[in-house]
Amino acid sequence: MTRTVYVNGAYLPEHEATVSIFDRGFLMADGVYEVTSVLDGKLIDFDGHYARLERSLNELDMGNPTTYDDLLEVHRKLVAENGIIEGMVYLQVTRGNPGDRDFAFPPEDTVPTIVLFTQNKPGLANSPAAKKGMKVISIEDQRWARRDIKTVQLLAPSLGKMAAKAAGADDAWMVEDGYVTEGTSNNAYIVKGNTIITRALSNDILHGITRAAVLRFAAEAQMKVEERNFTIDEAKEADEAFITSASTFVMPVVELDGAAIGSGTPGSVAARLREIYLEESLKAAI
Amino acid sequence: MTRTVYVNGAYLPEHEATVSIFDRGFLMADGVYEVTSVLDGKLIDFDGHYARLERSLNELDMGNPTTYDDLLEVHRKLVAENGIIEGMVYLQVTRGNPGDRDFAFPPEDTVPTIVLFTQNKPGLANSPAAKKGMKVISIEDQRWARRDIKTVQLLAPSLGKMAAKAAGADDAWMVEDGYVTEGTSNNAYIVKGNTIITRALSNDILHGITRAAVLRFAAEAQMKVEERNFTIDEAKEADEAFITSASTFVMPVVELDGAAIGSGTPGSVAARLREIYLEESLKAAI
Image (cartoon, rainbow over all chains, first blue to last red; front, side, top):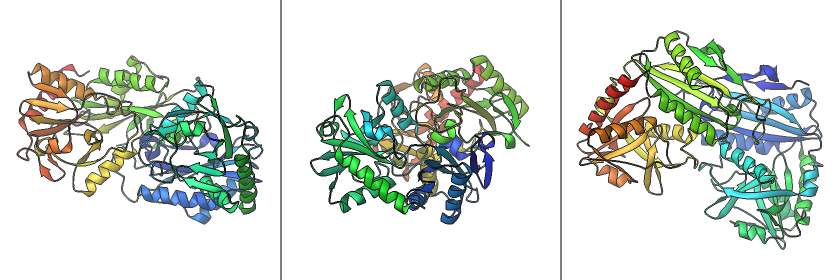
């Protein structure tokens, strides 16, 4: 089936969806993105993703080519057109096409480019990976300094994912100055006793929408949360580990650099948080 | 006049030149580039740029969709079609269009995308800026760790250029751990007495093609070259400062963070190196 995608106001078959070679997103990675999950045909945490999109655009002095209502409508239309029950909607905004290349920003009246497409992922909520758990390796964090802005500068995470594959693992946790920052496309957590430990928000990591929700649910469930740095060695000694992201929700990590974490099987805290997150998010889905 | 540009084997009017929204260059900044100058209608340092392109592609395990001979032909055809006497040829190669988005690399048979276009810059060699000199500010280097690979992850340099503009300057020198790495799109140098000082090659800076040529010409002209780190304070106390890049050749820097360097006018070493570089490069142009 040919997907219908959205480019600058037009709904198009995916093979006809293009941008200019002069688009700042193509020439300079001058763009930001969001990924919103779909469960039961509804959008998960849409408000959070919209708020973060606005923040990313503001941080880069980039115009917002859309509004909350319009964007919600495009999301819903793409989900309906493509018959997505479980999956994702990917959204990218770039500084647009100034018609030539220059390091300096183009004139303010350059219209930002907006692109959306769906990804069909049946079984997203009941993922077998959530029952099996993930294997993770550690790598140096090679990314730029503003990881709080969700830009398309994704070469380092992409190379990290390939390094994990080459090592027979599922993902990589990035390490800077001895401390874990996050996974290649997710936030990282360890559990010691009844305490969930995850790095505090700063420019060093993405401000995960799923992270915010999971930490809120954890607090509501009387779990203790410590937002602080941790090392790979501490993670190896943890009782559990897991990641969160918009497309994986809560996913247990059972192995780190070849060492089993806890019992080497998915832990109960991650399982409980995944259950609560899916339940609560579905209730609030729009 | 409408430019003729090149996209994946086709010569097209610039307004019809597009890439898929699924191109890895657009979605993940998974692409590398080169800029080759044109003087007298001929290509400057083409061999150096081709060699660096191959190195960048290798470092990222990316396929090379072209050959030296084919690429030279495309460069020459674009220069001729667009009547470029002085200007640049921009070249970008990405990991291509796998038809969907994934952090993992696409299958090996995914054809890389190749895009080339010209920029017409009459007066490039006799630039008034070379007589006046540039004003530079210093900023923190926010880029990723592999600046030796010439990727399109150019947000930090672009933001740096805008910070310079906002401060009434022409460019920014980036500083890491107290030492200058390079300019936003050029290598940085200071001159003390008869010694040219510039940061040594490593993953921290771009391996400038113009840098290599200029250092070779400097040695041939019996100038002393020291490849080592220097600070902004040392630069402010220098007799001269300058930058090199493929599109600016050698360009004097006369002010740094508001302080005049040397006499506050272009220095004789930079002027001499610019003269030698233009003369020798033109002789070797193809």
